[in-house]
Length: 216
Ligand code: GLU
Image (cartoon, rainbow, N blue to C red; front, side, top):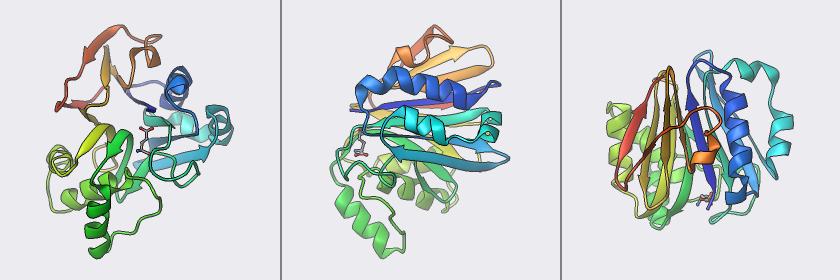
């Protein structure tokens, strides 16, 4: 179990995501991380330990960002460490994941043979590389995610950002929870409603197998 949250809108995304992570800390707390889009580039900050540790590492200029994702981890594959903390990135892609990918070892082997370099011991990192691989074969971000998750066995709630799609956050789930918060000019996506209840109270509960594209 772990907690994930994403935000897209006009406000300080880092503030909203850190605040949401604190409300999700009960779901897992061995490490935490965030990724945000700033000046067209994805910036990632992550570390072992509590959200307080993460907060102290966040640079003030990241607070200009209007789109971010965050994660509080309960390790299933790979020890709690800075490298294994989410988000995981590949090329223009960054994502957070709650769940377990049962067939990650065979996918990892395949991707390594194709030249993808792994920097963590997590099952999650295969998803980032798979989406990048399909994205670079000229699929849209939605098609690339759909194709990537069709390869996965196990459970997942995933929230994805792509540098090449600065106005989109995409969520998809299977056997792990994912809820969407809808407000005027901003959207939230998280493992659980309390993560964004301070900000909005219109909620959509995603079903297994559903994917959603959010823009502000
Ligand atoms: N399996 C992933 C990991 O170990 C996600 C764990 C979780 O859902 O907390 O990093």
